[in-house]
Amino acid sequence: MIKVGQSMNVEPRVYHDGKKVKHVEKRVLVGPNDNAPNFSMRRFTVGTGGCSPYHTHPWEHEVYVLSGEGAVVHADGEVAVSAGDFAFVPPNEEHQFVNRGDGIFEFLCVVPLDGEDG
Image 1 (cartoon, rainbow, N blue to C red):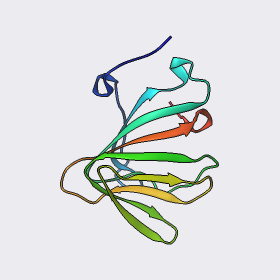
Image 2 (image 1 turned 120 degrees about the vertical axis):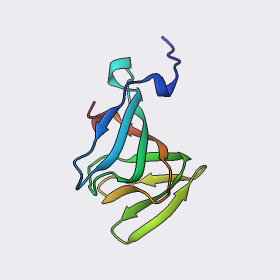
Image 3 (image 1 turned 90 degrees about the vertical axis):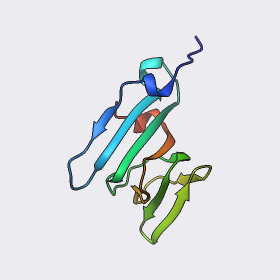
Image 4 (image 1 turned 90 degrees about the horizontal axis):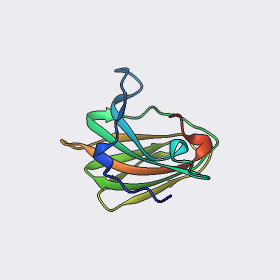
């Protein structure tokens, strides 16, 4: 069955420990609960001064920036991103997403189902 919805109507999961991850909300738009066979599509909202943890894992990310100013941090430095930009993070690459602007930083992120934690 086809699913259509409004992303902001999806209940967010909040990530914030004040150290490794700050001011992050994740909305799983399509994923395991929808019987998606291969991928999970998520919308991340990163508040001012926020960041995902600096980490690595065995799956890839495809990212599309919706709004705000941010950076993709990696082992060799960082790359600035803003609305309309995209990024590919290969498997096993250290990475982090950081809000570098004054407002919210939002992006879509697609991962294989093995990379979805709920």
